[in-house]
Length: 161
Image 1 (cartoon, rainbow, N blue to C red):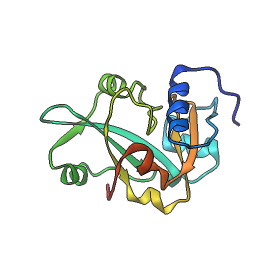
Image 2 (image 1 turned 120 degrees about the vertical axis):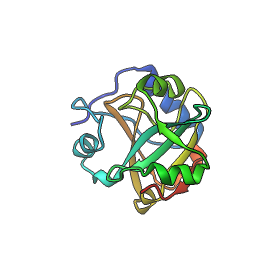
Image 3 (image 1 turned 180 degrees about the vertical axis):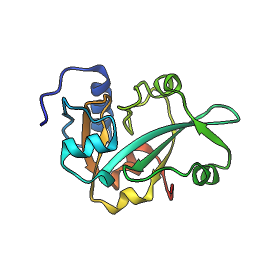
C-alpha cells in the first residue's frame, strides 16, 4: 500500500530532474520498502522485469563511475559492459555509490546524480511500455515510459546479459 511522500531532499532531487526532462510522473512511497526488484514489484503490483535496477560500477583504470540500468529479472554480465565501454570495470563500494550519485544503494535513481555518469541501459527494458525506477530512497519509486530512459540519462541501449 502506497502512502504520502515525506519531504526528503533525495526525492526532491529526483523530482527536480524528472521535471527538468519534462517527465510528468508521481513519485510513490511504499512503507514496506522497494530496496530490491522483488520488493518493488510486489509493492507496485507489476512484473519484476519492469523494475529498473540501478547498478553502479567503476572503471578499473581511473575509477570513473558507470551506471547500468537493467531489468529486475536480469543479472548484468560485466564482460558485456566492458566490451561496450572498451575497458575493465568492477563493482563499486557503497561509499563510492553515495559519493558519485548522492544516493544510497537501494534508492539510486536513473537521474539526479551528484555528477555526470556514463550510463548503459538494458535493451530488455524497452520491451515494456512502462517501467518503475527508484526515486532516491529505498521506499520511493516512479513510473516512466521505457523509451524515455535513454533521453533522460543520455545512456546507450545495450545488451547486458
